[in-house]
Length: 337
Image 1 (cartoon, rainbow, N blue to C red):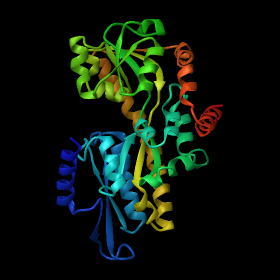
Image 2: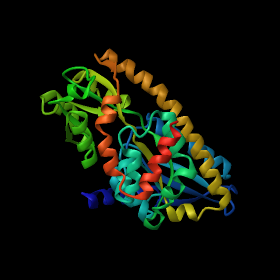
Image 3: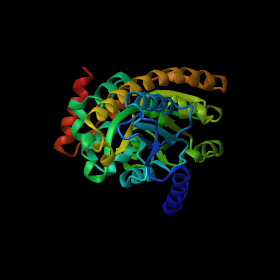
Image 4: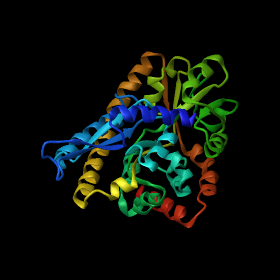
């Protein structure tokens, strides 16, 4: 499978001009008269807030570096699934990829801190932590010896439970319900402690699985819920607010370290601006997603999250396996006060 994806990627990149960071002629814009085209892998469509934010980032980066860099985004998993694109960034085949936070646990288990249930209180709390270099600087640089640099983190919504049977208000309400989760032991344990049965499954299979009764529901943010039409077959959407995964922008470390200090600073400044803009666009898109889901029959209900938070406390403690992870978690919780 992976070899097939690599073959497809190499075909695409060859058509685009070769390496993940190719150079093209640009009229006297950069110091050597060349523009480096930085290819970015993305698993969502062009209307996604992160895609739109990265487009704006690319325009600003090109403008402020006098054409030294240009961003080219490949949406809809055109360059492969997220796990595969990480390897492409490592090898320098492509320059960057936006990936789910849970995938970085495979490279440094301390990233698990930001993927735990109820670690963040709100989007504002999450973003204040994930882009505070005093908190995350060492962690984001810890993958450089593996060819990766975490340049920043995007908000990717709040995950809530939805199902075809009834509104969820307490852990007891989830008893007997099979809920689709992202594949990981952590998520299986989390859903069990929340009262349900976690069923790992590819996102593309969820609609049919709920429709046929193989599972009873899923857990995700409002954008995915609405865009994938899950409101049609699982109309009960309950705000359990159990997870707030970040999405990271991974950059080939050799590429980033090869930039001048001035260009690195511009890159960081414009990425932070793009991340702020993405949060704004996310909020706007969520309002529209809720309206569309309600028109399709969705019923949204608020939930007292304290029983769910308490139910998952033992999982949180189980995952804080190193002193670094414990210190990170303490800083995250301190930032919530």
